Length: 207
Image 1 (tube, rainbow, N blue to C red):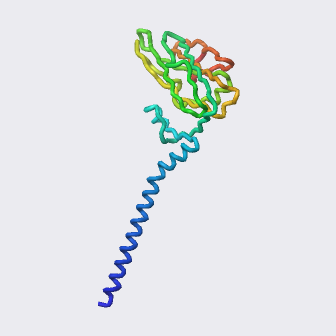
Image 2: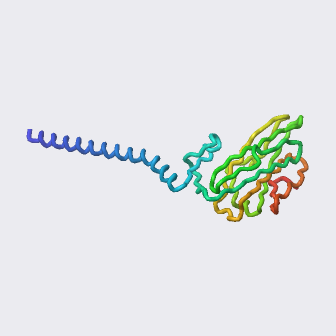
Image 3: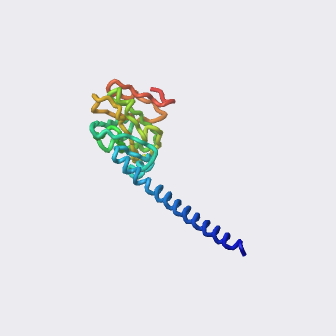
């Protein structure tokens, strides 16, 4: 009988400890849940954009992800787009130029049309002007990474997703991105040289 009060006291202590642990768990859960909006608010206050490449490509909007970039809103860069078809293609950008801030992710669409009555495979190669802009023009997604096959009369639209590095020299205010689209497997004419930069042909393709 003398052990009954000890058992009751031990049970009360266990209940108190369980209650404290539950409170601590709830506080930790609430803190972790609040971290997300806090983190986003801090990033917005500091001007840091956290971008997801996949979400950007699918929705055209930025969200949380694994690509960090600092937008320099004090500078505006004009990016011009040029399209050259080496062969029977209709090849053009959806817009001739855009104005962007360094560090800002931008998407521009290009349209391709096979005007022949036969299936054709082709690929694009880029060139840049001025020359020093090439090292600061970062493409996250580009049709120039792959070879494509289009059926007779088929039309395709593909994106170029890019970021101009904020380290771009201050005296560069305009960048020209030129693409040459040519048939793979045929005799490939030399791509035009934009400014002083000669494009590099993909492996396996001879000029």
